[in-house]
Amino acid sequence: MANLVFPIIMVAVISMLYFSAIRPQKRRLFRKVKPEPQPRSEPAPQPISLVPEDLDLGKRLLERIEGEIGGSDAGIRSAIREFSEAVGGVDPWTALREGHVEETNRPWHWLAQCCDLAERMADTGFAPRAFNFCRWWVGLHGQLTLNDHADMWLPQVPLDYRGRIASSAVAALARVPGNDYVIITPREMFMAGTIRTLALTELQTLAREGASLPASARAYLDVPAPLVDQFLLDGLARYGRGCFSDYQRDIESAVEVESDVARRFAHGGRTFVKELAAAAAQAGGWVAVGGERALFNATTDVTEDDAVIQALLEAAVLHLRSRCVAPIAVTGLEWSHWQRHHAGDPWATLGPPPARDSHALTPLAPGETRHVATLSFGPAGNKILVSRAGDEFISINETIFSLDDPYLVRNEVARSADLWDLYASMGAALQAPPVWTAEDFAQFVLCPPMDLRP
Image (cartoon, rainbow, N blue to C red; front, top):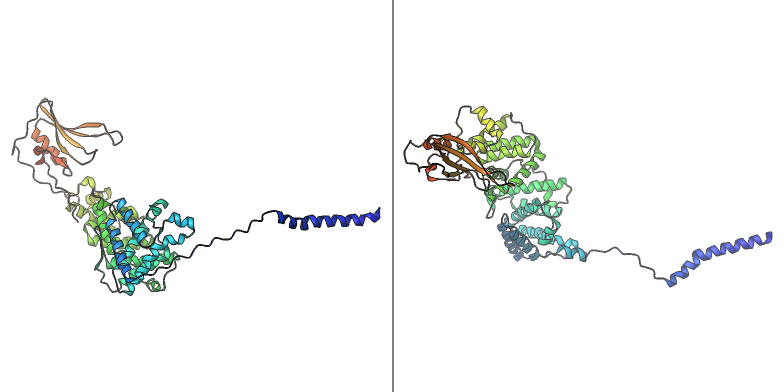
């Protein structure tokens, strides 16, 4: 029996080798072996070769876009899509399916090379306009969805192209006087100094973010960009006026201005606050109003008792008073400053009241109610009514309860035994002229109209 142990062990070993090594090799003859997946290589981007005529094409495309900015949504979408298609842009969904996603950046590649072409041709106007368009598009980040980018065939600007375009703008404006206007559109104008400052700031921001910048840009990284420049002051003037204007053109930049102030504050801190307050106070006018309100709305290091802030508040309230802005329209901070430093001075210079019985008033019959003024436009615009109850005349304020529940509400304001006296007290109580007045009541409105001229 012992003689059988060794042969049995040998048979077991041979069987194990057979089934673990030889059989699997034979089985591969009868089954399909899938090839190993190969990594998909993305096709190389198509090269871009420009000729001088392409610079003219770029100017026409940018001019179309500049003309649509601030206009209708359909107009700007059409202009952006036209730009992308004209310079070889592709549908991003198609590019994704076909594996050449890099081609979606072709419009920015084209624009950067067009800036290089402009520099070789000594054209100082193209690169600043290209940079301003690029800056505007970057500013829309967060507001556009993937579908928006797909609809216009234009992605966000890659960091390296942002650097190339900004560097070209700085180089183009190196010898252009800072107060020369280099961008004039239907809605805004930019001076050379403003665009150069913005481009320098862009390069320094990109350097901090670790972007790959062209060698020509490195010389600009040590050039200090001012914390406060004319571009910011111009924006603050529009911002200040926009606080009192119903015109979309005046108020559409409010978010952009506050964001710009917040970015500069994050970079310059307390130094920026002091520089902006001093510059805005010196400029006065709507710049002072916009500077004061933007600092308190967009920064966190503003102390009302600081001398520089007091000077800014003084400049702001004096301008608001000179432009006949009603007390009800100023902020609590502005009104507090006025009362603290100008106690006893009247805010508004009212016109003289009409001489009593200088003209006959239209009689009001018992039980009659008459509309004599509307204080503001819109569904919630208060109306002033007068009515007669027996021998008494009553002034009434009529408005809606709320926009969600717009039923009319009437509240009695004052009574008088004399219609002339009632009209006189109503007119003296107004802080701003109504948007509409009846002929009889117009002479009793003593407050001057608000002046929103730049």
